[in-house]
Amino acid sequence: GAVVSQHPSWVICKSGTSVKIECRSLDFQATTMFWYRQFPKQSLMLMATSNEGSKATYEQGVEKDKFLINHASLTLSTLTVTSAHPEDSSFYICSARDLSGLAGPESYEQYFGPGTRLTVT
Amino acid sequence: GQNIDQPTEMTATEGAIVQINCTYQTSGFNGLFWYQQHAGEAPTFLSYNVLDGLEEKGRFSSFLSRSKGYSYLLLKELQMKDSASYLCAAMDSNYQLIWGAGTKLIIKP
Image 1 (cartoon, rainbow over the protein chains, first blue to last red):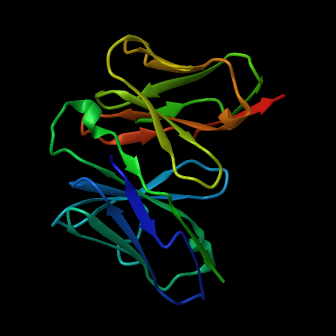
Image 2 (image 1 turned 135 degrees about the horizontal axis):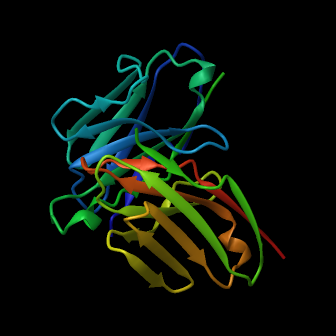
Image 3 (image 1 turned 90 degrees about the vertical axis):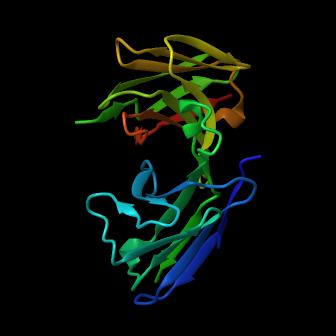
């Protein structure tokens, strides 16, 4: 159980174009989804937190107009990198958590998708 | 501020035991997670501790001391496949995860 998928797994795009990454919870309802970015040999950097049906909360320094997040359903969140530039090249990972069971703090475990490697040329 | 500290890199020998330490400072505390991340892959859950003490799961054990703001991950009978980064993450009062930078574990034959 608790499987999260991401699509695409890798993408190469030209500078100035936009790229959409999908994150799906396959067998549970994800009340909250998280988007992370990870540069080579660095740790995860939380970009934003999104709750289904509401606007995403962005971390300090993350441009909300550049990284558009939509969490329209309990199983799907999308991250769109608008007007991508080479410095946006990174490993983007989503995670999801399911609070429907309210089993206690351990239920706050985040289930990670496999990640999307974005290369902007 | 909120902060997680863990060593950047550790090296150990196949078959041996290694302990990866993590200290944390958070606004409130709702537990500590350990994740394993192989290069180029997403993190996978290893353990969760919210009470003081040692939790054992096969070759992996995790320890927590809330009064000291300290945790460790203990890996026994190391295998080459254990070569990975190990991420420590503490959950604050808002149930948000504060992530450490990760410890890269190198296993040598």
